[in-house]
Image (tube, rainbow, N blue to C red; front, side, top):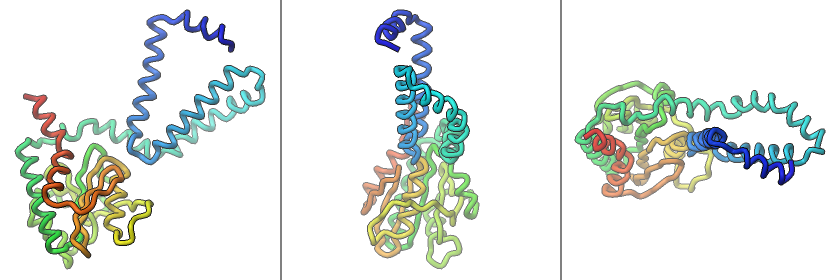
Length: 267
């Protein structure tokens, strides 16, 4: 393909062709958005770069007969291999599509959200004061059902007394994470995936688990250190340490902001 061919191609563009290009662009953009925040993001970018390079080489260099034959022959195998390589991420993407607006689907009013934030802040501060090790995971857009099923299902209203009872060191359910869906404790003693990232020496399994669950979606994890009582928050694989009650409240208000946004749109 020469530059003259390219100019000829552009000269034949019409409204339907432009719409076709925009639809393809939208598909690529949607794929990148769905994989954003997952470990497969770098792989997707690399794959798209390889596809672009192959397209350029095979269309602009007609003499590479063997290379073009190799691409045509391996393309079916690549298409079969992609779902295998991206199986966890594809599952997460389909789950997101099936749960496009979990905040909107839950019957929580802004008053209930404020009450929930007050309860979480108060309970976390008491856990910190007593140095009860704890992981409290708040479900976001990405569902956590598989992790709930690894623990003990509770489905109880979030309360300070219940959280303190669960994380009491001699309690049967203290060793694991609590997962909160809406304003209810869905499950306790849940097993979370551990982050493979290197952490500081003083950070243990709780912090690694808190980071791990946030690397697999948009959940928020509150971690209380058993050794020091330090409060940390993890989201999108990022850990913020040494929070006080005011900073924790701001983090929770930002996390639950979609409730208030939906309420304003409904008015």
